[in-house]
Length: 566
Image (tube, rainbow, N blue to C red; front, top):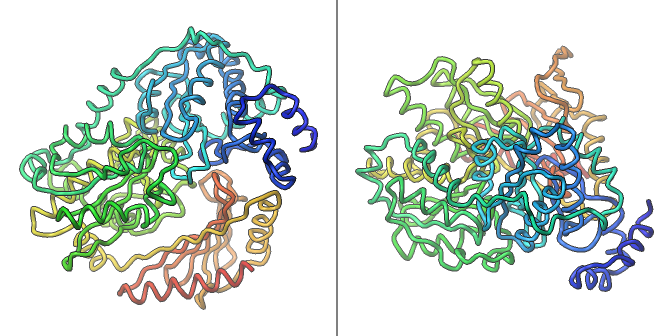
């Protein structure tokens, strides 16, 4: 159907005033962009700009995808309907309404819903799916995206984001839901149960298992002074409870960012990956003489941090640096207590640094590399549990997502918040800082540095422009990058690795539109389209014996990549 026909259907429909006004103010270009396609599922579900249209997220597109999910559940039978769906939401505009409408659509199908009445973090939703033995889960969030966005994550019965096989079935059903204005709602929400306190209590009980050295925390926890920002999102309520329960009480909250506000008025982007999002918290830390700063994104699945240096300034840490220090702390503790399993494994994404993996290897712990998207980490945990092949010890993505204990099956910033505080307290007890922990690992294993470059491709032709660049890399494979020979090329679209001697091996990961190049000096480069935004991402990882050499390598590689991408 052409965008003009879809636009006409919306113009003729009974819309809420705010959506009708959106249609009225659209320019011709905005009309086309809002209707030329339907929102699609990426690595983390459906995510888009708020507004009227099929390429926007609104009550009708939310009802449409929930109707598709409901039909999928119906096809699984009465047991699946009774097991139901857990639903939560974050602080973004229309999140409560979207969650309520999702529950009403499910209820109209006779499907049970377990609904939080107020905002809760993504990891708690993941936990709720598992704890309630629900068949699926829905999280209304756009995670760390700008304020114009909202989103809809779908979870499978294991508490991980729904795997591609199931998503494909939901997408097939989605394409059959042609009339979004006639989807039935059970306004009484007869099949909805509120689950607030019972799940909070059980989640917090599980959080007690995250603390590694309770004696250390009991002795040093109160002396660690830090600042926490929930970035206007879900983290504060459950995060503070988890911190205090663990024994961390000497912290301050960034008051301006503790206000629940979908406009995120104090930051350009509510993303702890962005150093600018930590600036206000760092001001607090300097004023209060704090040792560290931590921040969680609006749905509290990502955590970023900055730590004080000897000169009083603050260093913003990368996700890979945080992961490496946390892994080192966890494995050191297990080795000290003779609880390090012989089959231990950490799980990470193919675009994450080799820093934490190298640390793990020094303990005899293997690393499983999976596709980007925490659902693949969750699936690997499930595989370990089913086959008893490995013992899961830690999971992470470079984009500030971490999982310590698998009672959640998604990245969990609340777990990361508590463990980060423990590790910071550990270093403080030695007269050091978390930054010293990073430096010690650099000196032992090499100076790992990384860089991510995101190119924006908005609008109708954005996907074609991204596809053309990826095709250029795929069809005209560079033999050198940054002046260094390419020794291995991994093309995940064919699940193959081509080596310098032209040997081709099969990769274990599922197929995906990702290219990765390994260079002769141990550096690597990956190229992939974002699964949630119109962006093409380039990842660079290097290691050298000094930080200066590593940074120089990154600069040369980045320049070469951008020249090649033109």
